[in-house]
Every structure is written in structure tokens, then in C-alpha cells.
Length: 453
Image 1: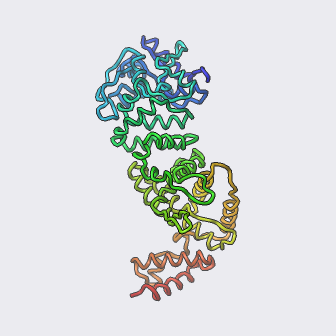
Image 2: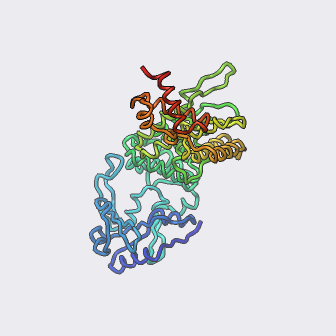
Image 3: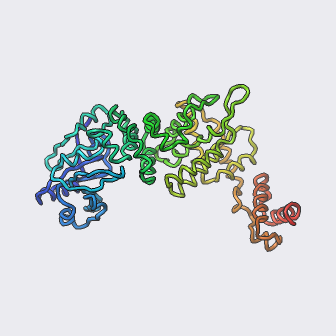
């Protein structure tokens, strides 16, 4: 483990300004922890015995982002730096935030109120010394997550800390100590009262770790999974046939691992792509389970999960669409029409994401590299089709509702949509039909034969 902590020149300049004014100033949080682990620091947080109003006098551009809790954001030479006054927290009646805070002259008291020992190491930028009153260095060395003081009290103060413990375990590849593990299990009652947005933010951070499955195993083992994602908890013990080495739960979390960490929405799609299997499962006469149409059930279930945790609409649409379309099994004897229908169903703009989801799905089967020759072949077929054909949605047709109405006298009602859908199917079967005159003839004939009353 490295014992080197440094910071940009601007951060040192800020610390020097505090010291010249007679105040203490320490670098704290992830910037210290990560550098001690040899990782790159991303955020720069300072703590000081200067009161917020005194910090605002010291620096010109200061935003009172959390001034009620002693935090302001100093913009120093374009660096946004969170500066928090030493404080002692009062009781956490709602399990989310302290009822009141009081400022403290003691850095040691301030560090005691934090969540985990590894996050309570302070670095004096002027003296270039570490201050570690809670044993964080030892826990970093032993690669473990330990709550400060009595774990149950820390998690009772803020239920989100339980989720954060599981997230840090995946982020740093650390173990959760037994006392911390037990503290999580004893404070389940704090989870339902948490802000849904805060839980969503933690989920996103888990998706950004190298191995999200580590967090979800801890959720399972601590009982948090049943509270946070009961739909995923129901997948535990649901066995699968064929080449699957894991039950549906483990397959899901390993599929999530199998998608690159930069694609967080696709990782979420991988995590939930099979949650409909328990509800769709049927045991056949040979004793093997089948899960017909589980993707449709999974889509409906994930929409409810995303509503529960207030996902952004754009992410929700993407994730649910990928899950709804993840069940495709390419065979070399597919016709070009079948390839075009896949493009039309999935959407050309979603194909790469769908293939990433499939690659994760393949990885989650046995957690080892498997042949994806069929996927490569499908990509080649799609590339060939795209060089010849360009109609994969209604908007690509050489005719539209206005022309069908004005020239074909088709009314602007539900029938118009049905005609356009039929015309798209026609063109997917035979792209040569995609010209205005031919489509008008086919559309009018279809309307008069099947829809006109």
C-alpha cells in the first residue's frame, strides 16, 4: 500500500491560505483513501475549523451548497472544492440526516462522525502528515470495510451507509468486517425511509465498479436484496438448463459484470434481463424448467423498478427496450428478411447496445470466455443488409400518412396506423416495394379489403 498523498498546486495554495489566516485545514475523504491505495484521486474535499462565513471571507467565489451543514463549495482557479467545517452531528431521527449539527474545534471529533474508518483519514497539506484516529490505515492495509465505532449506531444514523458499505466492497475489492456486516443486518428498518434518488445514485456508482456482483452478493447475504430489489431476490435458487452454471440470480449479477463498466445503463439491463423467469417458469415432463416469454415479463417488471427508483426517462426507455429485445437466437439459415426484422424490432440505433447486453449474457452463463461466433456472423449479415436496404421503420417508408390520406382517401384514424404497419412489413419482406406508387397501391388495397367499413 502506498503512503503517498498529494494534490494539485491549487489545493496546496488553498491550504496555505487557511494556515496563514490562522486556521487548520486537512484533505479528507476519497482523495486520501484512493491515493493511499495507489489509485487516482478524483474529488478534492477539505475540512477546516474555519466557520462557513469565515471560509466565504477567505475566498472570492464561494457557493453555499450545504451551508446549513457547514459545507460550501469554493471555486478556486476553476477547481470546485468542497470545504466543510469540523462538526459534531446530533441525533438522526429520520435515518437520513442529523436533526442538528454543531461546529467543533476538533478534527478528531469531526472524523469520528464519518461512516467508515477508511474514509476518516485526514492529510495535513502544509505539514504533509497523516492523521488517522480511527485505524483507517490498518483497515486499508487489511483491505476491509469497517464502520467507525459501533456499526449499528452508524447505520441507524443513516441507512444509506449500509448500501455504501456494499458499494465500497465492490469498488475497492474489500471485505466487510463481521461487526459491520452484523450492523447492516440489524438496521434493515432504515432502508425503506431512504430517498429513492439516493438509492438510484448508489446503484449507478455500483455499476461503475469493476465487479458489481460483489455488491449484490453482499445485498443478498445481508438481507438488503429482499428490501431493495425483491424481484432479483426471487431469482435465487431458480435453476436453469443447458450450459448455465448458475441460478438466475447469480447469472444476472455475473451478466452485469460481463458488460464494460462505462456502459452503466446496459449493465442495469443485464442485471434485470431475466427477472421475469421466476414468474414465467414451467417444469416440463422431462423435469427441465422453461421460461417462455420471460423477456416480456421482465420488461414490465423492470419498468416498475425504474419508476420506484425514479430513473431518468431516457435511461428507462433504453433499459426496458433492451430487455424486451434480448431474446434473439441467430442461425446461419436466417433469411435477409429475418435480419431486417431484427433491425426493425430492436432499432438500428440500439443494435450495438443489444450486442453488448448479449455479450454480458454469454459471460454470465459460466463466467468464462465462450464462442460468440454466431454474434459475429449476425453482425456481418447486418452490415451487408445495411449496404443494400434502408427501410427499417415507418419513417423510412417512401410514403406517409399525409399521402395515404390525400391520394388514397384513407382516413386519419386507427386504420392509418394499421396500414403503415402493414406497409413496413411488406418492405421488410421485399425492400424493392419501397416506392411511393407501389406502396400507395398496396396500402389502398389493404385498407379496402380488411379495414374499410
